[in-house]
Image 1 (cartoon, rainbow, N blue to C red):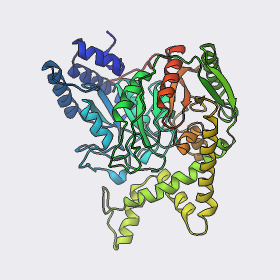
Image 2: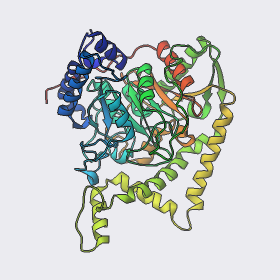
Image 3: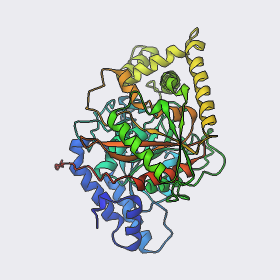
Image 4: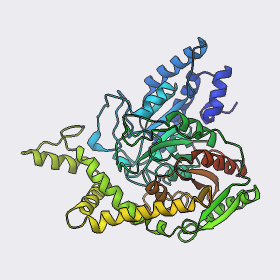
Length: 490
């Protein structure tokens, strides 16, 4: 059998239920892998060894006693550190939340516990999910297991690196402008953002509330579908939660693409995209055509302004959301001679430079006299994007594009150039602004051996057809394997 830490969720579940292995053995395997890789990768901020082993032993007892078990029973999973976990430190990779222990589980955490999942720990991320490389963490950057000199992408780079390195079988991330799909592409994984409102945000530390969504990072499309079905569904604790039933993720896996109409977005698949990424994208589109899909070239002109609109809307929302971190309610407090001085000193000490940059940008965009010129205009652009996508989905079943404009870049290469860093999300941001689902599937390796991702986008509540197309792409593409990571005992 393949090393336990390298199994997919579905493979591991089959092995558990057939008695080929135990949850304790699975959990020990990923924890051992973490002990070898963390010194170089730094995927985790917290590893809950004691809690994970206790959960694994409980799962093994349920299976041995033939009691009802959940769909993720005994499977080791990593959680991004912006999801509330009762009794486990949760920092969103910020000094301002250092030492904060949540008194409750977020809804997705609760659902995973009920499904029997084993939590390995909390993963590194860009501070408050602001970044595209996981270099903006107050606790140091994460490195890409495929090449330790490169970034894993962000902001869910810790979860992506953990799954790629074998220190978890799957992970959860959050996606505000591409923060699941972009690291999935750079780390050779499947990453999926559901329709806005399908997965509860209760217990997710907010960055931009109208854009944030939680989703899976996995080694296969089937794993992503299984994990999505566990966490999707209405939640009365989240006022934006969709009240109807969630679409199936697994229903049409393996059904092929014959007869489906696949739209290629011209604005997202040409200028600004790396030659190797573009070649891999075109080759995959050709494979879809050969498999029976009808390929339709489409123009969505407003997507060219999506990045500008996003970097007004997201900072505006973050400036409001992060006002709650003031030294009074949570975590860090730096004393001052007045309350105002205490708050000012706490925020200056607790927030990193990228967070401060976005708070200032958002506060300016919302200020009197500038609201209509900046925030209002950005919202009008967002409405145009929503309308263009709705028109496009009357012509096609799904839209496709590269996930990221280039493979993983070197650590530090873009930290002094924020605009260059923001461009890494240029293909993923439109789906966040429209609220539609989207996912990334690995389709090849660059000449330097770094993964390349392919993005599939679908209309609201179109998860079933999106997973159908993604599973076809996975079947039509060569297996890129796992990163060959030289490990050392920590």
